[in-house]
Amino acid sequence: MFQSALDKMLFLTHSTMLNSLLKTKIAGTPTPFYYYDLDFLQETLQSALKISTKYGYFLHYAFKANADDRVLFIIKEAGIGADCVSGNEVLKALKTGFLPEEIFYAGVGKTDKEIILGLEGKIAFFNCESLQEITVINEIAGKMGLKAKIALRINPNVESHTHSYITTGIQENKFGIQMWELEKVFSIASELKNINLDGLHFHIGSQITDLEVFANLSHKVNEINDWFINSGFKASILNLGGGLGVDYNNPDVFPIPDFENYFRMINSHLKPHPGQDIHFELGRSLVAQMGSLVTRVLYTKMGKSKNFVVTDAGMTELIRPALYSSFHKIENLSRSQPGVASENEDIRKYDVVGPVCETSDFFAKGIDLPLTERGDILAIRSAGAYAQSMSLDYNLRDKAEVIYSDDLA
Image 1 (spheres, rainbow, N blue to C red):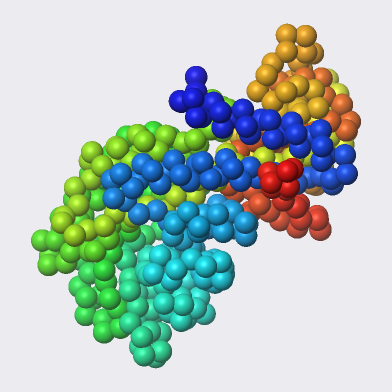
Image 2 (image 1 turned 30 degrees about the horizontal axis):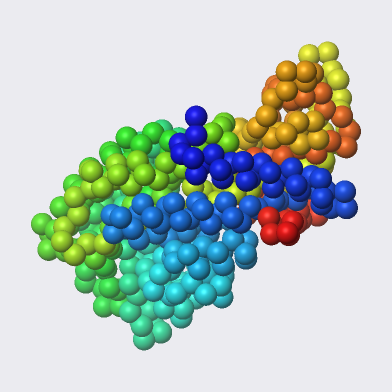
């Protein structure tokens, strides 16, 4: 079921655009390429903003999800800040027009060069992940005659119930300051002359679909925030990171993530003190469903126990399935209208694989598709996040281009 009439309309628009792309543009367009539905992106952003604004929350966009120039411009124009995890992301945020006072810079391994770049750019916060990092920033800021504004990224040891490679908030992870370190870190950071400690930051993982996880996080943030208050420090911001997941299995049923219940859950459990602003760093949930990876079938291979579809896209264009066996819905645009099943179709099971010289180069295993032949066009859905941004030139592959929905106008 669709969550709302608007969601249904958005899905139909997205599917119509994919069909239009196939019929009007595909003949002369080299594949593979990323297709971005910019209208759908706008609707997703407005949905997130409408609900977060109701609670007085502030949003930042996680650049690592997708740093395409046009995508960034639309997000910036919507009034959302930037969440960066590298010096080049900070630099791109500044060049794209994001306001320095709305740029947060996280990352467990900031280099001296990157720290200098952030200080020169007058960014809002360095989210610091270790005592050593804090002392290095203090030293560099002192040499530059500046004062760095920082937030402590604290590892709250909250299980996110997501894939182990994208969980970041338990003790076994490399991220953040551990709970048992807090007293020492706070004591030393408070004495450093070139540091302005003014925030607390938390991020426990990605692709989280169990909203109770965010209730657990909120309770832990309350506990930690109260400890700091009782220690004589009140942070001006509490940054709860991101992590809200999207529906990879049914992108047409729930095209827009459940922002309503996500923010309501946090608002029901988080207990900030007066004067504390609440910030979030959303990435995947804002951009994943706007994008598809469009690829052409090069060959089909029929084995004794498996049928293979070999595409001209590979793990170089979408590494998530190879990296942690993630699922993306795949549609054969040449055989059926997206989202519409035909009773007369010859449905078969296929492994959909790429051309890269790795057995891990696959998009799906044992999935149902209409009888698929050389030259057919496939759409690999929910590829707006962590596809283009993680693309590789392994095997000296060409970089896939981007086609935007307004290219079809």
